[in-house]
Length: 365
Image 1 (cartoon, one colour):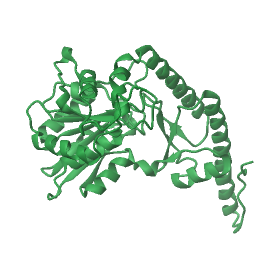
Image 2: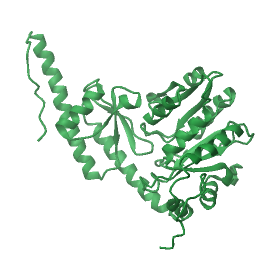
Image 3: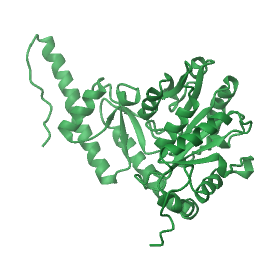
Image 4: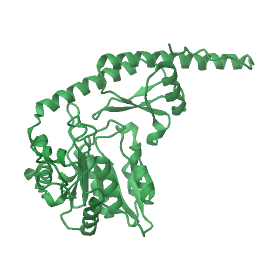
């Protein structure tokens, strides 16, 4: 071992690593130029989110932050930690989980510190078009509210879909983009992320200073992974990632088509990422009970939609091998058919004024 990466790095990150991220976000065709000074390296994307929210919120002010619903629960955790009021803007399931623009606009006021936009989405599996991102940015610009763009799933867009980085749009609204290597490069746990400040008019001068100070709290992220970052970003073949994306898209289609055959549930075809939301209200409107019973009886793990702010849904991850996904769908169908049969039987028994019955659901082996 050379020992070249041994020792503390600068708190904002190694210069070579920051240069690599800046190059990754620079797009001369769109007039987007990112300098290394616009980049701060973090201990994963979650840390980047925490730093960004903390820097944007005035601890002495009575401010609010706009978060998506459904949305990743970490957003709420961070907002609660810094003491800012949470306002949730709805995503529309009938429009592929796009942002309800009217609701977004109405929720903003002079005390709004920031909007969090997650694209591609966890948990929805949606991908926003450039047009929709421009619409969001237009509202943000009108209200003079900065955008926090959570783009950890950047590039996870299925066939025929594409979504630009928020900072690459020709907008004057300040954007702080957060990302990392865990998802696209399949290295969860390496804990290296970043935040990139897009601020042509220098409106975030004080926020930038706050971010640099916050970076000193952990004296910078892992120096070994930082040293490897330039080669990771430059040398990982795009065909390799497209192969990974192809597997995910095949899995998504396979699971979606299989779920269509299961009574009582409804799923939307994912557009990207590795997640999909499934409406289970036809089986059990209580998604917490649904998720718990599904595990107890069939040993399938799903996350209840209540965690993401959307009761009556569950989140499915389709990154497992195909044979595992198909077995899970078979077990899910067995559970749902048993549950709907039980509900029908219960109704019939109640009609006969029967006061006591035991559950006919099949127990797990």
